Length: 208
Image 1 (cartoon, rainbow, N blue to C red):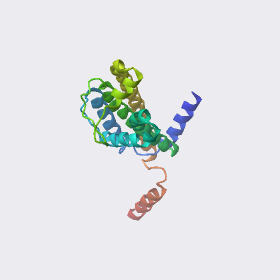
Image 2: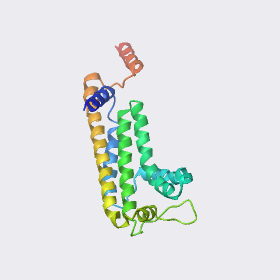
Image 3: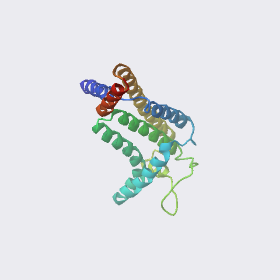
Image 4: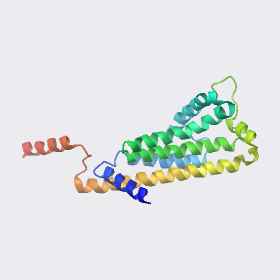
């Protein structure tokens, strides 16, 4: 609880004086993409192509570890990359960027859920860097003896993805509200925009 309070206090300080106008449309798109992704197996967000590229890269990265890690590596990488991106942005104290990274993680997990749930049906079109595409989750769940639970596991992954997206949207909306409130009281200058403020003051004197 203490860490959460410290996080929120730091996020509030970061948001004070920043502009929400360019950031709010990002949240609107994340909410729209999440709604579409949750209920439509064919929907592809602007993150989907990036996620797929990292998924395929994950197979290559984990390849030297053996067949099972290689197959699992694609799905792991498509989840780990948004997490790493979000943490790197948080390390730079970009709290809104952290929220967007969390939203990407949620969308990636929901995309993955469709793939997991297709393990037995094998109806989705597959992409492969090799000569023949194979269904990752048919192999993974088959090896573990969990193939009959593909839909339940997919539901869990989808639920966790939706939770990550909702929490990220909540953080992003709260940050925008802080920005809007501070902009109204401080004139809407971004932190570090002292030169712009000085120029506007000088210009006002010249016009006066």
